[in-house]
Length: 410
Image 1 (tube, rainbow, N blue to C red):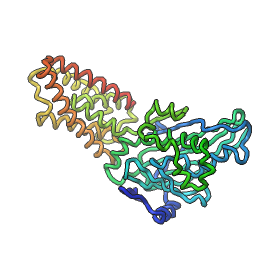
Image 2 (image 1 turned 90 degrees about the horizontal axis):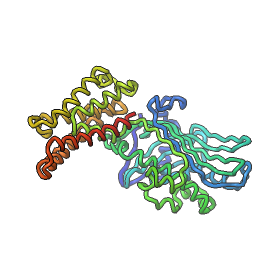
Image 3 (image 1 turned 180 degrees about the horizontal axis):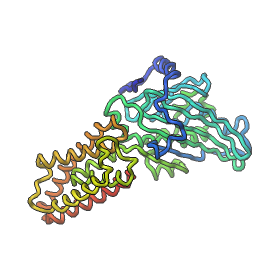
Image 4 (image 1 turned 90 degrees about the vertical axis):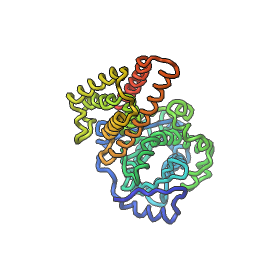
């Protein structure tokens, strides 16, 4: 199995890239699922976006018009913002079967070099529209696994030119545990920004005349565009950036229970030790197909789910009594850390990643225990709030967080 390559504060030379491109020609895929089976029910995340890029005169495309210029830009990955994903390939090779090395740049100075290969090329014309595009498959040594389509289309009756991105993916390989944690925490944000900026880049390339000025792929990807000066973090926002960047249609079905869910469940475990396992028990008992395998699958048992619910309710009542030990006392803290580890491991998308999620959940539970203990003491001792009232306020926060987590899990 090919390891994922990563570097800090430096990239890869042209010679190194060419060597890796040669190897990518024969690398196997890092998944074995047919495209029709890459569904949300089978655990695949699905991402889609679409936008109008420009307009040509009505009718089929003609040589030299905007459609043909954009077609060349799409073929040469001109839509990819190099601050997030820089594509390395030889445009002298035929597009079908072409290997590429995608240099992922999630944070300043951190880079991953991931291989893909063009699997299919689509070029169709009918009475209503012309469509051109291609799909790429991820290979061994990629941090994601799946297939992504990039399609440019022209509506003959209006002349509208649309760009459409559609992907089905799940986690692939990671070179180390912290890369996986980082991907879980910020990966979707950068993926969304990349989608938003892709449409705007094509629009800017066409509007600014850059397609005539930059005939080669390298210059096209690194063209000095106005959109490239927009902050990546801004471009990742769902509402504001989508409107301003002109993304008309966007769909996200994220099936991977990411690090935010793990951290949220860990925080809930720090607030109320039995609440987080009880919440997962209810979720898994209602949707058994999402339950983990092995011993953790017991959470899906209706009997276990009901027992956890009773324990959680008893904890809420006991929390208001004076004889319950502080949550930061060693026995209570260990119990809440174990609860956080349990729920973290249970929502891990893959068995081999369960230890990472368990550590995240336990750490979040410990941090939450100290934080809410301090807040509770502040309310009761500094503000003079009765312990029962302070406990009820914390219950309300825990209930709101639990509701958000339950909705996210569903």
